[in-house]
Length: 368
Figure (spheres, rainbow, N blue to C red):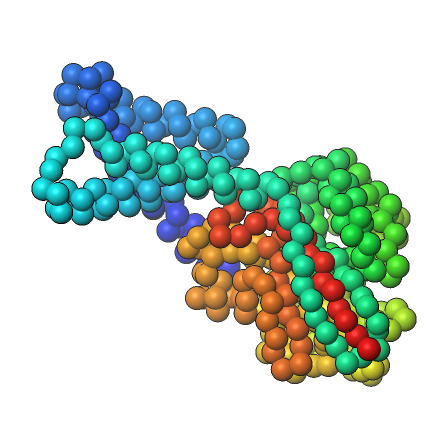
Protein backbone atom coordinates (compact mmCIF):
# COMPACT_ATOMS: atom_id res chain seq x y z
CA UNK A 1 0.00 0.00 0.00
CA UNK A 2 1.10 3.53 -0.73
CA UNK A 3 1.30 4.65 2.89
CA UNK A 4 3.60 1.74 3.77
CA UNK A 5 5.91 2.73 0.94
CA UNK A 6 5.98 6.30 2.24
CA UNK A 7 6.76 5.10 5.76
CA UNK A 8 9.52 2.75 4.57
CA UNK A 9 11.15 5.46 2.42
CA UNK A 10 10.94 7.99 5.28
CA UNK A 11 12.43 5.50 7.75
CA UNK A 12 15.34 4.58 5.48
CA UNK A 13 16.17 8.24 4.76
CA UNK A 14 16.00 9.00 8.50
CA UNK A 15 18.20 5.96 9.21
CA UNK A 16 20.89 7.04 6.72
CA UNK A 17 20.92 10.59 8.04
CA UNK A 18 20.91 9.24 11.59
CA UNK A 19 24.03 7.15 10.99
CA UNK A 20 25.85 10.24 9.74
CA UNK A 21 24.64 12.35 12.67
CA UNK A 22 25.42 9.78 15.38
CA UNK A 23 28.87 9.14 13.92
CA UNK A 24 29.61 12.84 14.24
CA UNK A 25 28.05 13.06 17.72
CA UNK A 26 30.03 10.12 19.12
CA UNK A 27 33.21 11.89 18.13
CA UNK A 28 32.58 14.39 20.93
CA UNK A 29 33.10 11.80 23.68
CA UNK A 30 36.37 12.32 25.51
CA UNK A 31 37.54 8.75 25.06
CA UNK A 32 37.10 8.99 21.27
CA UNK A 33 39.04 12.24 21.19
CA UNK A 34 41.88 10.59 23.10
CA UNK A 35 41.93 7.49 20.90
CA UNK A 36 42.03 9.61 17.76
CA UNK A 37 44.43 12.16 19.30
CA UNK A 38 41.68 14.63 18.43
CA UNK A 39 42.40 14.35 14.72
CA UNK A 40 39.40 14.82 12.44
CA UNK A 41 39.49 11.78 10.15
CA UNK A 42 40.67 9.18 12.70
CA UNK A 43 37.92 10.44 15.04
CA UNK A 44 35.29 10.08 12.31
CA UNK A 45 36.53 6.61 11.37
CA UNK A 46 36.47 5.37 14.96
CA UNK A 47 33.02 6.85 15.54
CA UNK A 48 31.59 5.35 12.34
CA UNK A 49 33.11 1.96 13.23
CA UNK A 50 31.40 2.05 16.64
CA UNK A 51 28.05 2.87 15.03
CA UNK A 52 28.38 0.09 12.46
CA UNK A 53 29.36 -2.46 15.13
CA UNK A 54 26.36 -1.40 17.22
CA UNK A 55 24.02 -1.81 14.26
CA UNK A 56 25.45 -5.24 13.43
CA UNK A 57 25.16 -6.46 17.02
CA UNK A 58 21.54 -5.34 17.35
CA UNK A 59 20.80 -6.73 13.88
CA UNK A 60 22.19 -10.18 14.68
CA UNK A 61 20.73 -10.21 18.20
CA UNK A 62 17.24 -9.14 17.13
CA UNK A 63 16.88 -8.44 13.40
CA UNK A 64 17.50 -5.72 10.82
CA UNK A 65 14.16 -4.01 11.48
CA UNK A 66 14.93 -3.66 15.17
CA UNK A 67 18.45 -2.43 14.45
CA UNK A 68 16.87 0.43 12.51
CA UNK A 69 14.36 1.08 15.31
CA UNK A 70 17.12 1.22 17.93
CA UNK A 71 19.21 3.59 15.81
CA UNK A 72 16.30 5.97 15.22
CA UNK A 73 15.57 6.15 18.94
CA UNK A 74 19.21 6.82 19.78
CA UNK A 75 19.29 9.59 17.17
CA UNK A 76 16.11 11.12 18.59
CA UNK A 77 17.50 11.18 22.11
CA UNK A 78 20.86 12.61 20.97
CA UNK A 79 18.98 15.42 19.18
CA UNK A 80 16.85 16.04 22.27
CA UNK A 81 19.96 16.06 24.44
CA UNK A 82 21.64 18.56 22.13
CA UNK A 83 18.61 20.84 22.34
CA UNK A 84 18.48 20.64 26.13
CA UNK A 85 22.21 21.35 26.49
CA UNK A 86 21.97 24.30 24.13
CA UNK A 87 19.27 25.80 26.35
CA UNK A 88 21.29 25.10 29.51
CA UNK A 89 24.43 26.66 28.06
CA UNK A 90 22.49 29.73 26.98
CA UNK A 91 20.98 30.17 30.43
CA UNK A 92 24.15 29.45 32.45
CA UNK A 93 26.64 30.82 29.92
CA UNK A 94 28.91 27.88 30.81
CA UNK A 95 30.82 25.32 28.78
CA UNK A 96 31.01 21.75 30.07
CA UNK A 97 34.05 19.52 29.84
CA UNK A 98 32.01 16.33 30.07
CA UNK A 99 29.82 15.48 27.07
CA UNK A 100 26.65 15.35 29.17
CA UNK A 101 24.22 15.34 26.26
CA UNK A 102 25.86 12.22 24.84
CA UNK A 103 25.95 10.30 28.11
CA UNK A 104 22.39 11.37 28.87
CA UNK A 105 21.18 10.30 25.43
CA UNK A 106 22.78 6.86 25.81
CA UNK A 107 21.33 6.39 29.30
CA UNK A 108 17.82 7.46 28.26
CA UNK A 109 17.98 5.27 25.13
CA UNK A 110 18.90 2.21 27.18
CA UNK A 111 16.15 2.80 29.75
CA UNK A 112 13.47 3.75 27.20
CA UNK A 113 14.15 0.82 24.86
CA UNK A 114 14.43 -1.62 27.76
CA UNK A 115 11.00 -0.56 28.97
CA UNK A 116 9.67 -0.83 25.39
CA UNK A 117 11.11 -4.34 25.09
CA UNK A 118 9.55 -5.33 28.41
CA UNK A 119 6.14 -3.94 27.44
CA UNK A 120 6.26 -5.85 24.16
CA UNK A 121 7.50 -9.20 25.44
CA UNK A 122 5.29 -9.47 28.52
CA UNK A 123 1.52 -9.79 28.51
CA UNK A 124 -1.12 -8.07 30.65
CA UNK A 125 -4.84 -8.62 31.11
CA UNK A 126 -6.98 -5.59 30.24
CA UNK A 127 -10.54 -5.55 31.56
CA UNK A 128 -13.60 -3.86 30.10
CA UNK A 129 -17.05 -3.56 31.68
CA UNK A 130 -20.00 -3.26 29.30
CA UNK A 131 -23.75 -3.46 29.76
CA UNK A 132 -26.69 -4.34 27.55
CA UNK A 133 -30.48 -4.43 27.77
CA UNK A 134 -30.48 -7.88 26.19
CA UNK A 135 -31.15 -10.94 28.30
CA UNK A 136 -27.76 -12.62 28.40
CA UNK A 137 -27.10 -12.53 32.14
CA UNK A 138 -23.38 -12.20 32.85
CA UNK A 139 -21.03 -12.87 29.94
CA UNK A 140 -17.23 -12.91 30.06
CA UNK A 141 -15.52 -12.65 26.65
CA UNK A 142 -11.77 -13.27 26.29
CA UNK A 143 -10.21 -11.61 23.26
CA UNK A 144 -6.69 -11.77 21.88
CA UNK A 145 -5.34 -10.77 18.49
CA UNK A 146 -1.99 -10.46 16.74
CA UNK A 147 -0.23 -13.39 18.37
CA UNK A 148 1.99 -13.65 15.25
CA UNK A 149 3.25 -16.92 16.70
CA UNK A 150 7.03 -17.05 16.69
CA UNK A 151 7.48 -13.30 17.02
CA UNK A 152 7.69 -12.98 20.82
CA UNK A 153 6.74 -16.55 21.80
CA UNK A 154 6.51 -19.92 20.10
CA UNK A 155 4.03 -22.74 20.58
CA UNK A 156 5.06 -23.49 24.16
CA UNK A 157 4.84 -19.84 25.23
CA UNK A 158 1.49 -19.51 23.47
CA UNK A 159 0.14 -22.50 25.39
CA UNK A 160 1.12 -20.89 28.71
CA UNK A 161 -0.73 -17.71 27.78
CA UNK A 162 -3.81 -19.75 26.89
CA UNK A 163 -3.65 -21.41 30.33
CA UNK A 164 -3.57 -17.95 31.89
CA UNK A 165 -6.58 -16.84 29.86
CA UNK A 166 -8.58 -19.94 30.79
CA UNK A 167 -7.75 -19.38 34.46
CA UNK A 168 -10.00 -16.31 34.15
CA UNK A 169 -12.96 -18.59 33.29
CA UNK A 170 -14.17 -16.86 30.12
CA UNK A 171 -17.44 -18.00 28.56
CA UNK A 172 -16.06 -17.57 25.04
CA UNK A 173 -12.67 -16.91 23.41
CA UNK A 174 -12.38 -14.72 20.30
CA UNK A 175 -9.33 -14.39 18.02
CA UNK A 176 -9.85 -11.50 15.56
CA UNK A 177 -6.90 -12.16 13.27
CA UNK A 178 -3.13 -12.42 12.80
CA UNK A 179 -2.97 -15.61 14.82
CA UNK A 180 0.08 -16.75 12.80
CA UNK A 181 2.68 -15.01 10.64
CA UNK A 182 4.95 -15.67 7.67
CA UNK A 183 7.75 -16.56 10.09
CA UNK A 184 5.66 -19.00 12.14
CA UNK A 185 7.06 -22.54 11.91
CA UNK A 186 4.85 -25.53 11.18
CA UNK A 187 5.76 -27.03 14.56
CA UNK A 188 4.77 -23.88 16.47
CA UNK A 189 1.54 -23.60 14.48
CA UNK A 190 0.53 -27.17 15.31
CA UNK A 191 1.46 -26.80 18.99
CA UNK A 192 -0.49 -23.55 19.26
CA UNK A 193 -3.58 -25.04 17.64
CA UNK A 194 -3.38 -27.94 20.08
CA UNK A 195 -3.30 -25.39 22.93
CA UNK A 196 -6.52 -23.87 21.60
CA UNK A 197 -8.03 -27.34 21.51
CA UNK A 198 -7.39 -27.74 25.25
CA UNK A 199 -9.39 -24.60 26.02
CA UNK A 200 -12.96 -25.42 26.98
CA UNK A 201 -14.94 -22.20 27.32
CA UNK A 202 -18.72 -22.57 27.46
CA UNK A 203 -19.28 -21.16 23.97
CA UNK A 204 -16.03 -22.29 22.36
CA UNK A 205 -13.09 -20.65 20.57
CA UNK A 206 -13.72 -18.50 17.48
CA UNK A 207 -11.30 -17.23 14.85
CA UNK A 208 -11.44 -14.77 11.96
CA UNK A 209 -8.60 -14.05 9.54
CA UNK A 210 -6.16 -11.16 9.67
CA UNK A 211 -3.85 -9.91 6.95
CA UNK A 212 -0.96 -12.22 7.96
CA UNK A 213 -2.75 -15.51 8.58
CA UNK A 214 -2.85 -16.79 5.01
CA UNK A 215 0.79 -15.78 4.47
CA UNK A 216 2.29 -13.39 1.95
CA UNK A 217 5.09 -15.63 0.68
CA UNK A 218 3.50 -19.04 0.20
CA UNK A 219 3.69 -22.31 2.11
CA UNK A 220 7.32 -22.88 1.07
CA UNK A 221 8.41 -19.98 3.25
CA UNK A 222 6.85 -21.07 6.54
CA UNK A 223 6.32 -24.79 5.95
CA UNK A 224 2.52 -24.84 6.00
CA UNK A 225 -0.29 -23.54 3.84
CA UNK A 226 -3.46 -21.67 4.71
CA UNK A 227 -5.29 -24.99 4.24
CA UNK A 228 -2.94 -26.67 6.75
CA UNK A 229 -3.70 -23.94 9.28
CA UNK A 230 -7.43 -24.28 8.74
CA UNK A 231 -7.19 -28.07 9.11
CA UNK A 232 -5.33 -27.81 12.44
CA UNK A 233 -7.76 -25.22 13.78
CA UNK A 234 -10.78 -27.33 12.86
CA UNK A 235 -9.12 -30.43 14.29
CA UNK A 236 -8.96 -28.57 17.61
CA UNK A 237 -12.60 -27.46 17.50
CA UNK A 238 -11.92 -23.81 16.63
CA UNK A 239 -14.78 -22.12 14.77
CA UNK A 240 -13.37 -20.44 11.65
CA UNK A 241 -15.41 -17.45 10.53
CA UNK A 242 -15.06 -16.03 7.01
CA UNK A 243 -17.99 -13.66 6.50
CA UNK A 244 -19.97 -16.13 8.59
CA UNK A 245 -22.69 -15.81 11.21
CA UNK A 246 -23.50 -18.40 13.87
CA UNK A 247 -26.07 -18.40 16.66
CA UNK A 248 -25.09 -19.87 20.03
CA UNK A 249 -27.78 -19.68 22.71
CA UNK A 250 -28.33 -15.95 23.35
CA UNK A 251 -25.32 -14.90 21.25
CA UNK A 252 -24.70 -14.22 17.59
CA UNK A 253 -21.04 -14.53 16.56
CA UNK A 254 -19.91 -12.88 13.33
CA UNK A 255 -16.48 -13.19 11.74
CA UNK A 256 -15.73 -10.84 8.84
CA UNK A 257 -13.25 -11.36 6.05
CA UNK A 258 -10.11 -9.28 6.43
CA UNK A 259 -10.63 -6.06 4.49
CA UNK A 260 -7.11 -5.96 3.02
CA UNK A 261 -6.58 -9.53 1.83
CA UNK A 262 -9.91 -11.08 0.94
CA UNK A 263 -12.01 -10.00 -2.02
CA UNK A 264 -15.79 -9.77 -2.15
CA UNK A 265 -16.15 -8.98 1.52
CA UNK A 266 -19.80 -8.61 2.46
CA UNK A 267 -21.11 -5.54 4.23
CA UNK A 268 -21.88 -6.19 7.88
CA UNK A 269 -25.48 -5.08 7.30
CA UNK A 270 -25.78 -7.84 4.70
CA UNK A 271 -24.34 -10.45 7.06
CA UNK A 272 -26.76 -9.44 9.82
CA UNK A 273 -29.85 -9.46 7.63
CA UNK A 274 -32.54 -11.55 9.30
CA UNK A 275 -30.45 -12.10 12.47
CA UNK A 276 -32.38 -12.19 15.75
CA UNK A 277 -31.91 -8.70 17.13
CA UNK A 278 -32.92 -9.89 20.61
CA UNK A 279 -29.66 -11.81 20.82
CA UNK A 280 -26.32 -10.19 21.73
CA UNK A 281 -24.31 -9.74 18.50
CA UNK A 282 -20.50 -9.85 18.62
CA UNK A 283 -18.45 -9.11 15.50
CA UNK A 284 -14.79 -9.98 14.88
CA UNK A 285 -13.23 -7.63 12.33
CA UNK A 286 -9.43 -7.65 12.25
CA UNK A 287 -8.87 -4.10 10.99
CA UNK A 288 -10.71 -1.26 12.74
CA UNK A 289 -11.62 0.69 9.63
CA UNK A 290 -15.36 0.29 9.04
CA UNK A 291 -16.79 1.90 12.18
CA UNK A 292 -19.38 4.20 10.59
CA UNK A 293 -20.99 1.42 8.57
CA UNK A 294 -20.81 -1.07 11.44
CA UNK A 295 -22.36 1.45 13.85
CA UNK A 296 -25.41 1.66 11.58
CA UNK A 297 -26.11 -2.07 12.03
CA UNK A 298 -27.63 -3.99 14.94
CA UNK A 299 -24.19 -5.19 16.12
CA UNK A 300 -23.68 -4.82 19.86
CA UNK A 301 -19.89 -5.27 20.04
CA UNK A 302 -17.09 -5.18 17.45
CA UNK A 303 -13.60 -6.38 18.45
CA UNK A 304 -10.48 -5.73 16.38
CA UNK A 305 -6.68 -5.85 16.49
CA UNK A 306 -4.18 -5.12 13.70
CA UNK A 307 -2.89 -1.75 14.95
CA UNK A 308 -0.73 -3.16 17.79
CA UNK A 309 -1.93 -0.18 19.80
CA UNK A 310 0.10 2.08 17.53
CA UNK A 311 3.32 0.18 18.35
CA UNK A 312 5.71 3.12 18.71
CA UNK A 313 5.40 6.78 19.55
CA UNK A 314 4.84 8.96 17.51
CA UNK A 315 3.95 6.40 14.78
CA UNK A 316 1.02 5.57 17.07
CA UNK A 317 -1.24 8.07 15.34
CA UNK A 318 -0.25 7.58 11.68
CA UNK A 319 -3.22 5.29 11.04
CA UNK A 320 -5.60 8.03 12.16
CA UNK A 321 -3.73 10.88 10.42
CA UNK A 322 -3.78 9.05 7.08
CA UNK A 323 -7.37 7.86 7.54
CA UNK A 324 -6.30 4.21 7.49
CA UNK A 325 -7.95 3.28 10.79
CA UNK A 326 -10.98 4.55 12.67
CA UNK A 327 -9.30 3.82 15.99
CA UNK A 328 -5.88 2.74 17.21
CA UNK A 329 -6.55 1.40 20.67
CA UNK A 330 -9.19 1.02 23.33
CA UNK A 331 -12.92 1.50 23.70
CA UNK A 332 -15.34 3.70 21.78
CA UNK A 333 -19.09 3.76 21.36
CA UNK A 334 -20.78 4.88 18.15
CA UNK A 335 -24.55 4.91 17.96
CA UNK A 336 -25.54 1.79 19.93
CA UNK A 337 -22.44 -0.26 19.06
CA UNK A 338 -19.43 -0.78 21.33
CA UNK A 339 -16.01 -0.97 19.63
CA UNK A 340 -12.80 -2.28 21.20
CA UNK A 341 -9.35 -2.43 19.62
CA UNK A 342 -6.68 -4.49 21.38
CA UNK A 343 -2.94 -3.78 21.12
CA UNK A 344 -2.33 -7.49 20.60
CA UNK A 345 -0.92 -10.27 22.72
CA UNK A 346 2.42 -10.23 20.88
CA UNK A 347 4.12 -8.43 18.05
CA UNK A 348 5.16 -8.68 14.43
CA UNK A 349 8.78 -7.81 13.55
CA UNK A 350 9.42 -4.93 15.97
CA UNK A 351 10.36 -6.09 19.48
CA UNK A 352 9.46 -2.84 21.22
CA UNK A 353 6.18 -1.21 22.23
CA UNK A 354 6.12 2.35 23.52
CA UNK A 355 2.95 4.04 24.62
CA UNK A 356 1.19 0.67 24.64
CA UNK A 357 1.75 -2.91 25.80
CA UNK A 358 1.00 -6.52 24.87
CA UNK A 359 -2.32 -7.70 26.24
CA UNK A 360 -5.34 -9.93 26.06
CA UNK A 361 -8.82 -8.69 26.95
CA UNK A 362 -11.47 -9.81 29.40
CA UNK A 363 -14.69 -8.10 28.38
CA UNK A 364 -17.31 -8.45 31.09
CA UNK A 365 -20.82 -7.85 29.76
CA UNK A 366 -23.75 -7.40 32.12
CA UNK A 367 -27.14 -8.09 30.65
CA UNK A 368 -30.63 -8.56 31.99
